[in-house]
Length: 124
Image 1 (cartoon, helix red, strand yellow):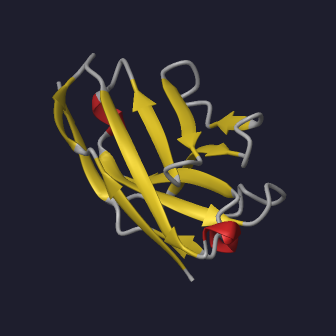
Image 2 (cartoon, helix red, strand yellow):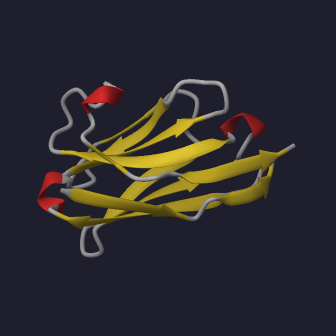
């Protein structure tokens, strides 16, 4: 099993920045690929960003491309999501997830490991 714990959420004004962290523990060999997802009130969970084990491959949703950056520190088993130029529509619960391979990452149901989520609220 892989345990994931997110931190760094909070309240920020529009245009501001936040950095989320997700620490993995347990069988981290199964967390080669890590991603961030979000779910706004009344909406379905959506993909935000994903990063490969080496960090050499990253992918973003169109809604955050150019504003958010995903990175990881494998010495700390931690993945980060730097969020800049935040907008009110970025308000959501952000969750990190882990899987073994990149293939199929856009299929939310195919991610086996999930954190509990952290709330991000952007005030306009």
